[in-house]
Image (cartoon, rainbow, N blue to C red; front, side):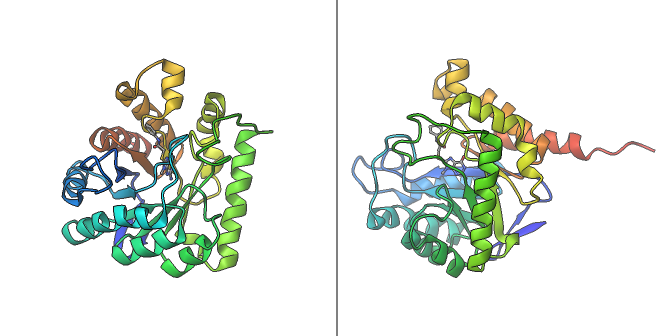
Length: 279
Ligand code: 8Y4
């Protein structure tokens, strides 16, 4: 199955790595609010050389406790970077946003997928997604990024997350978005305790069974830090292990900071999964 991301193909017959490109003032800035598009483009080029299948551009930090960013500020951060990647590189771009105005501006600038951690629940986002007519990743989250890690609670985390994603999938179909444009994501770390994340990983095949492509984002996340007591710089091996466990169960897209290593890990998984007996 090949996803059409505004004219650029994303081949999901193999698992793919989505390279993370944060364009917030703590990356690529001169210390002020100005984002250096050329530096962001250089990182995108490196990710393409390392085997990324898509690049996820985000201008709003979704870290717990992060500041709220205005529509104007978010557009000013992401649009020049998307334009530069779109004109220089032959790779699909996803826009990591929940704001309808940012979705529209990003798609106009050359993005070919919407990655929404709020699953199109913001007012106007569903209609923006309908109008943009690109693939959409619907992610589960409990609470807002500001409060989500305070006290996450579930009856049955796996069943609750699947029920939420089915409800959002149905809302998309009702709004006129074809099922074959949808990608589902359990939202590791978004309003989940370590045990909730582990249960979602153990039972990821239950989400895969819905028969839509599944995206997993575990790269360097704090669940690894909490369980292994390692700093953010020391989380690569654990991130690769979780990527492999995800792909083994059928995940199709792995969102990662470490593209080269993640491509190697998931290619090995794919080889094992597809090997045929000799003779
Ligand atoms: C260190 C490492 C510090 C990671 C913070 C983080 C997902 C996502 C994010 C995800 C989808 C993050 C935008 C959180 N995570 N989109 N976005 N799925 N679809 N934190 O899991 O990487 S941002």
